[in-house]
Length: 229
Image (tube, rainbow, N blue to C red; front, top):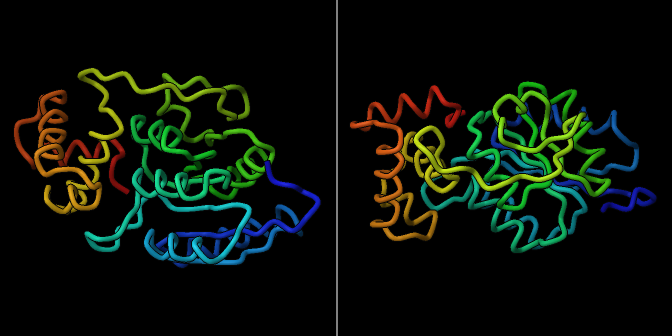
């Protein structure tokens, strides 16, 4: 929980400067003691900044592709949580896939906010997360039909996703997201620190569950199911 009696140092990460500017304007409306102490545009830059710049709250984009050696997505959230176990993390995203949204919480996010309703929902997320509660924005509720959520968007618990023909696991969804985003299986394996065999198997398992038989069909699924931004 963030101490509201002292200045709250905020770090923001997004690969779109306009979004960073919009977030700063929203923060100014929220509380006078919020102070932005760092802004970056990639996962790699974010990790480097946090290693030297203490902060009390992180607001980060989920998808920040910056070459095959960079980090974003679930991998970035896991690493952030491992390196900074007590840091409140709010994730901003355009993704509408339920497996990945639940995966964000499982990886360590405290709040997940859809960018389409950022002006209204980011303030609510800030109030919940700085108060020690989890939060998912209302525009994402329809994508989380198996998530236990209370009125107002605060998340009571985020269960592990059910693995069936209609829903991928977070790991499979992340592989599909990266593959449809233009990375090769080898590049995905390097970024996720898994073997090429494992990543290839996860991609094939995803296609089997979805009844897909070609990479073009997999891309169409990723685009239509909210896996791509």
